[in-house]
Image (cartoon, rainbow, N blue to C red; front, side, top):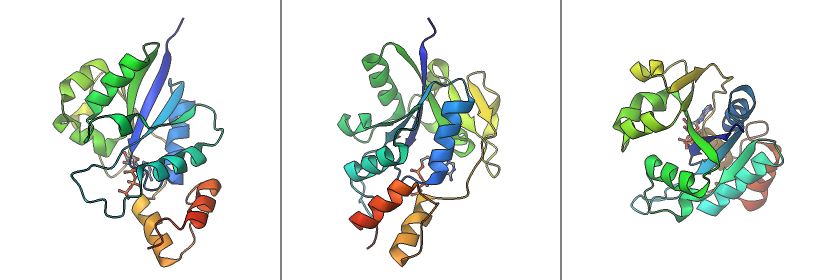
Length: 194
Ligand code: ATP
């Protein structure tokens, strides 16, 4: 039987927005992946939290964004790992915990260009497939032609979590920029308002 293919989409999701969800859904439905897990990065204890919301609040927003969307799942796996977490270590833990699945990575071409600097980049490239969405302003570098890398032209939204946070801080509307359930929760909780 074919093993279930899981793509990991890492992010701080501070907060999750429609740009993330378009990508996650594209990867879960238009590629060979069966599922996309949105892995919420925990706070790094060596960094000032700044405007980073608490781990559980960001996770909750990702869960609300996903709702009952088929093929998407929120993961809190890194909350319980030594911090800061390195992708190679998270991959090893997931592989060990879910031996019935094949894990791969999802990233933008901007991140692909810097992958050679990651911890154990050679092992990541040897052992895991990488699904890359093209960001027109970032060519992705020589790894774009690596046999383990597949590049997709996914629909992109020009949007960042920073922009969402600024809107909330300034009292501007975030309707359609985040899923409706996320907008409601942000409104109710007052997160990012100050
Ligand atoms: P911030 O503005 O706080 O830096 P962000 O919107 O870039 O946040 P992250 O949580 O860092 O959000 O994003 C998680 C992943 O999603 C990253 O790999 C990032 O490159 C990617 N990403 C962010 N925004 C978009 C977007 N609009 N379209 C596609 N990918 C995105």
